Amino acid sequence: MDSSPAQPAPRIAVIVPAYGVAHLLGEALDSLQAQSFTDWEAIVIDDGAPDDVAAAVAPYLRDSRIRFLQTPNGGVATARNRAIAAARAPLIALLDGDDLFRPAYLGAMVAVMEADTAASIATCNARVFGAVSSESEVVGPEQNRSATGSLLDLLGGRFNIYIGSTFRRADFEAIGGFDTTMTHAEDLDLWVRLLLNGGHAHYLDALLGDYRVRAVSASRSLLKMIRGNIRVYDKVIAARPGSEESALASTLRAREEERAEVEEALAAVIAGDTGDALKALRAHRHQMRNPVWSLAFGLWAFFPRLAPPMLAWRQNRHATTVTPQAEFRAG
Image (cartoon, rainbow, N blue to C red; front, side, top):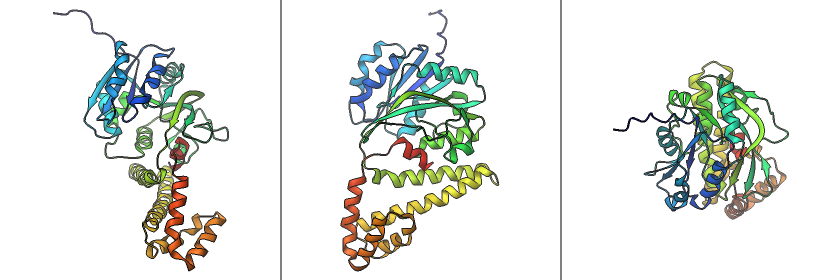
């Protein structure tokens, strides 16, 4: 019988979902192994990915701090919940399989969370790179860089929480983890529910991560993101009736409903509906302040059949990426 004492839990666990990014996973894990803070564990999760995550992670399993978990596909929220359940540390950090941590990330996050006991989230700035016209930062120089932010600050867009953030396992378990019914905006949903549970978010004004943007069709995901945001606002309204947060969430919800109507009308016109859908789109033209839209609506009044190909061209021209700034502004 093995009588050796159990190893103490690491101080922080890093959760690495790797669906569809096997070719980039090595860069993420290299950045993890380059951390100046070494008391960590990592759970890499293959959530039924179509690519060979097992082969990509295999060389890194020689590091006893890294474990590999394979599960049936259930979406990123389910994958993260499963990986967190397999971890032991009291702090949880999120690192998507195509992103990077800078060497000081874990040390800085652990220091913040252990010193600021009222913080439910520790976050930072990050470089945005990849499929973008030029590199930028998640928190730009024109944005508020307050050290702490409340739920009201987050909802009002005065405070950003980067996806590569850190939180407490106890708080995560208290709110039931990621909402597995959320297919989009699940990160915003987690931050909001953690802040509803109490405490504040603590921001370190330092570039501690690198967020990779991969080319996607923004038009295909935007409507789902908007619907996800609406669900988040509904949770705030239900949890804090009559509060300032609830009033702001109601305003934001109405704005997102109108955005959803615009996106639905655009999709219907592109599909060939030049009757009711084009009429619905015209009803929202106050949201489209660019003079080009005014010219287009004037043209479509006489030649409605031009609307679908023109809007399809516009969609293809603009369907490139969804940046973290866009996600945060949507929240």
